[in-house]
Amino acid sequence: MPCVRDLPQIRSDTARVTSPLYEAHVSILSGDRYSQRMRAICKPLRKGEIMVGVRSKDHGDKRQLILDNAAGLFALQGFNKTSVAEISRSCNASKAWVYHYFSTKEDILFTLLRDFLVEVSDRIAAVSRGKKTQSEQPADRLRAFIRECLQIYDDYRINYPFLFNEMRYLPQKQQAELRSIERRPVSELEAILLALRPELAKARSRRRPLTLLVYGTINWTYTWFEPEGKLDADELTDMAIRLILRGLCDKHLLDPGPIEGIIGAT
Image 1 (cartoon, rainbow, N blue to C red):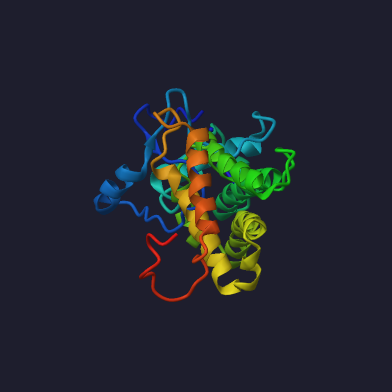
Image 2 (image 1 turned 90 degrees about the vertical axis):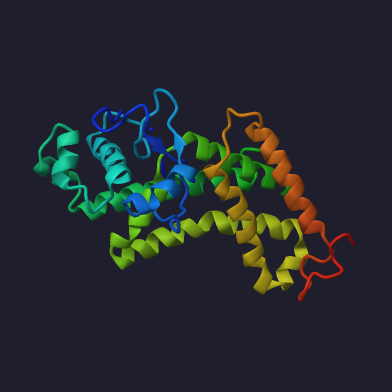
C-alpha cells in the first residue's frame, strides 16, 4: 500500500505519528481545537523510528533524501507552513538543489502520496491475487489481504493522514490521479468478496458499500491496534476473517428494509 522510515533535525523521542493509509477525512488542521482528537488517534514512534517517505532501494539517493525530509516536515507543521527553504536546509543543501529534482513544492507532496499509494496498491494486489499465498481460494486471499494491510500499517508508522489532508493544495489533475490509485485496493477487496458471495454480482447497489464497510473496518485499525500488545496481528486477522465470513454468509445480508426480526434469527 504509497508510503513509509533519519530526520534528526525534526524528530524527537516524544513525537507522535500514526500509521499510514489514506484517511483523508481525518481533520488535521493545526491548532488546539484538534490537538485532543489527534492525541486520541496518534501512536508514538517506537524507539529508533523516524518519519520519512517511501524508501527507494538506494537510501543515498538525493531525490529520496528530499522526499524523506519533506515528509517529516509536512507531517509536523503542514504543507503551507513548510517552505522549500526549510526542506533544503534539512537536506543541508540549497533551494536550487531541491528545484533541480522537483519543479514545485506541490510536486514533492504529490510524489510522496503517489509513491505511498502505489506501494500500498502493489503489495495488496500481490497478496490478494494469490501470488504470495500460492492459493486462489477466496478465504485465503481475504486473509492475505487483511494481514498485508496490518503489516503495512505497522511498517509505515508515519502520519500520512496529515499528508493526505494536504492533498487539497494539489492541482485537480494530480488529485484525480491519486484518487484513482486509492481505489485500487478497494477493487481488489471487492473482487474477493464477490468470489466469496457470488450473489453480490446481481446486487451492484450494495456491493461497493459492503466492500467499503469491510475495508473501512480494516483500515481504521491503524488508529488503535498495537502489534506489540496482547493481541497480535495474526490473531486480529483471524478475528476479522470470522466476522467478515459470518456476515457474508448471513442469508439476510442483501435483504432490503428494516432489521426487525433478523437479529437472533440467524
